[in-house]
Length: 52
Image (cartoon, rainbow, N blue to C red; front, top):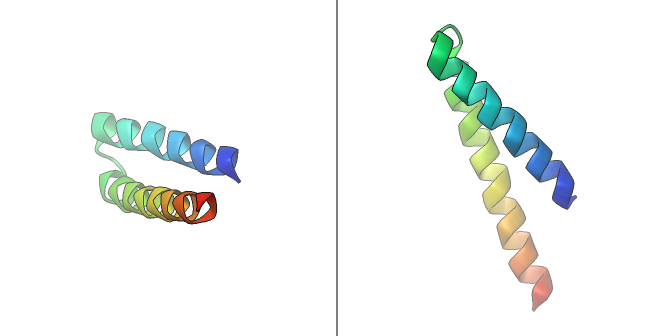
C-alpha cells in the first residue's frame, strides 16, 4: 500500500508539471493534485494510527 500511494503521487506531480507547461489540461491537473493530496493525508493518518 505504501508504494501505491507514492506511485500515484509521483504520477500526479508529473501531470501537474505538464499542466503548468502546456495549460491545456490545467483545471483537470489541479483536481488530480487535490485528489493526490487527499490520498496522502489519508495514508499519513492511517500510518500514524497503526503505529500506536
